[in-house]
Length: 423
Image (cartoon, rainbow, N blue to C red; front, side, top):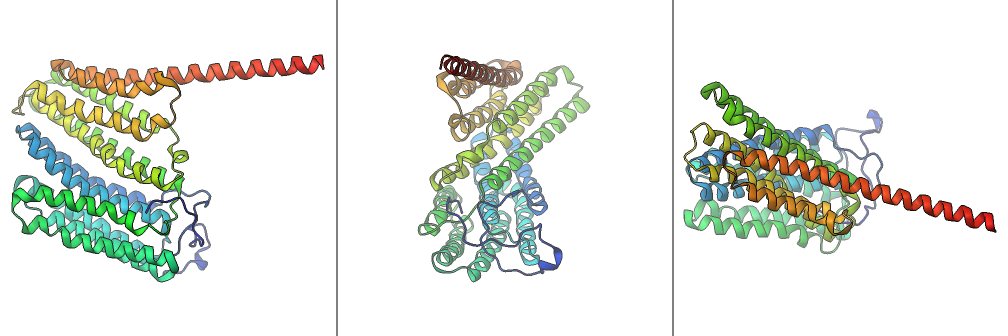
């Protein structure tokens, strides 16, 4: 659902008069050059409901890591988060190209929301009992709803575009059959089923768009991803705040928890700043870039949510609830933080940095954050300070470059004036 080709026809816009917009309308491709394209209230509601499932996955990750089952917990988290992220991403790119905002489109989107809530209800069973029935059921509900949307789009499409929409519908449907392996195969084989099916799911857009591409809107897509990042970071702050409050109320451990709370807040503030410092929509100018950027956000979203889970683990370890060492609790925060920094640099920042020094800021910060893991009780606070300093360094380097450009422009104007006077 990611491309650079313009659409030949645009659907009715939300700004049209109500009388011109009936309850059911043709689902035609929207234009990439459409002005003032922004996220709709339905899309914002969609995102908020998806974060419910992300929060459930985070809670279970906390329990797994706190009980010294980190490897198993991370594996389950990766699988559940993939189901959440992939369904969200497919809807987002489809909506950017075909959202006609009619009654049926809204109802089908609400069905997708119901699916993610079913998935969220099954997250605890997936972690604790390796029971994936509800997770799979919720995922299938979301995917069947998307298939319906693609079939609607195919009714108004012709030629290569119609073949593309049918390939999407057929490819998504076939993948749902493959996911049954999570229920039918022995537990030891489930990670391999997940890996195979995840690859198959991600190949569907490549296959579907081999002739023509969907007409997603760069500003709209960048806004949608940015809004979801904000929501995930907000959930991270909420989870960490609740954990700190619980630790203070139940154990009167303000002194032990204050460094964790302060460091966690600095990390999240820095994560927000670093993600939004560049206008990424200007980078999304080709199918190749769009695929890499869109798929890479699995790591950005997953690591951002995992930071919150790591802060909860650090709090539980500080008050004696977690059966792990201080080093392991610190790593639960620093590892996802470093992964977030590196992924944002790879997908966002490096395309806008000038010179070696600017390019090295985020990779160096990620390495420094990892080193902070070994600082004991001060690990989280130090990691937060390092993250905040990276923001300060980035701002200073950008300001210096802007000042140099301004001086250079002034010198050029002066030389031009002098040349004109001589002439």
